[in-house]
Image (tube, rainbow, N blue to C red):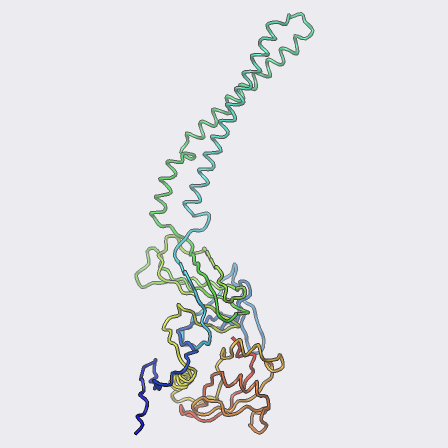
Length: 407
């Protein structure tokens, strides 16, 4: 009798998955704890779908709006939740922590003071050179003066040369004295200022955050941006009181060749204590997983679909909602095979109660089948949430536009 293959059982959040041990499926999907950033416009918060420079892009209905963040107060909200991604970005050498703005940096101020002291020394040395040159001119003029009779027609010119040399020597002496006074003053005493610098460093009067890392992706991200969440505690705050600085920035294309990213942002309370820092990468408005993503688990496509269904039912235990496609499920490779017309076309997908694709149609009623194998293949690799009636999954129709699924 043939022995049936053994099954390996393992747990995911809210999900028990059975995988056949002798037929391992490729784990191409990452489940991870992601983050959505929302910005306030009037009385409501709207999810950020892109970053342009320092402006946050949101959609209200079919209209797009850009919300500036520089030199104005902007209401922001952070929402955490489990997400699925079919690509994983590599973040290497992530370093984060407190820093200084240029005006508050003790080392920068010490270097400036050292430069000023060097300038004072240079002024003094130039003055000594000026005095030496004036002494030579003064000796020559004095010798000429002693050899020129008072009745000589050239006597006046010789006396003028002597007075000029005397004045030049006096000016050089005054300049040298001023240089010496500057060098001896506390302001230009580099030894004293070095002690002061060490004292300021020990006090930890940080007022900026600094984050650096290298980023690369096996699949090119054509419209990426990053959001950095920098958590801190003010110097006199209680242990549980934590503030957050949110830094969002548009990035250049990210591919297999790693790029170095460094950010320094001021505006933090002086003397704050560093708590934590996380970096989130997005492409076309959807977050992608990274090797540093929290609660990261590798899944097969089938496991990911099962998880989505159970998570969807848990979020709508008594709800009635239509079937829906999950954004970000269209791979870059598949997107590259589709024409602009195929990407922009609106079609209707018939979805089973377990979230699998049953068919693709031109009409919402499901009477006119779409005869486009490539679009069908693109939808087959995407993820869907089934329709629910009073919290129970049923077959349903999901309205789909492939351009909205690309990551």
